[in-house]
Amino acid sequence: MLQSLIEQKRVLGVYVSEHELPDCLTAHQWALIEILAPFEELTKKVSSYDALASDVIPAVTVLVRLLNRETDEDHGVKTMKATLLTAVKKRFSGVETNPLYFISTILDPRYKDRFFSTNTASEAKLHLKQELQMMSRAESEGSRAEAAEPPAKLFLKAQASTGSSLDTVFEEIAMEQAQAAQPLAAGAAIELDTYLGEAPSPREDSPLKYWGVNKIRFPTLAKMARKYLSAPCSSVESERLFSSVSHIIDENRNRLTADNAGKLLFFKKKKPATHFF
Image (cartoon, rainbow, N blue to C red; front, side, top):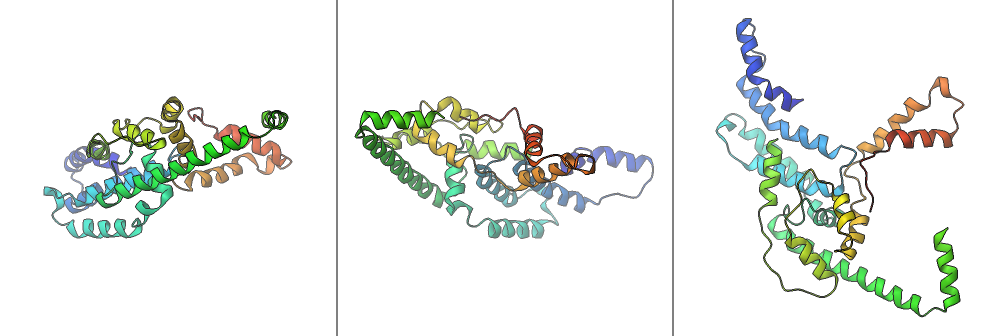
């Protein structure tokens, strides 16, 4: 809403002037709206049904950069920008040290390691490499243990298993910190170095589609991406889900069973654009 209001700023000014109306907003108030517009846009983004936990760190990084920029229109609103910047840093001070957020961000092909601050990017990649090595080790030990079992037991086990301005800043950060060639490590570390060495995907692309296509190239990373990219960005979509129940179960359908209500809710909320890998 704020963005559309900014786009109509000139039209509103002409209309007010032609009809000799009092100014609806002062220049200072217009400046405040322009500062708050990115907050509204990012709030809608992280509240959408397809928002992931990987969207948090890039959103905070973009907000911090926007608030740090000095423009000619900052006169009279510098104090507000400084207050907002302090509040953003305080509220999100721990996101880059939370494994859920920094691992999901690295595994999101739109962001990778481009949106971290300088002192946490290397630590996040090191932590991810260690977890990848642990996953690879656990899978190899599991395969050896399975190979040691008698054929009859393996057969039974197999049978059981079958039952706007923001866009510019996003692109700007994504193109920075180009990955230099790094010495190849063993195992999963090679996957990670190769993956990070490639350019980020466009922001409008789906990370789930990316891993569905590239799971053969990066099998270990794809398994970890499936784990971490399943986390939603916020609880907004679950709240919408609960609200939708009131449109399905009402006084005219009070004999609807819980099983049928669940099926109707599933069909109502199922998104055809969702892809699993």
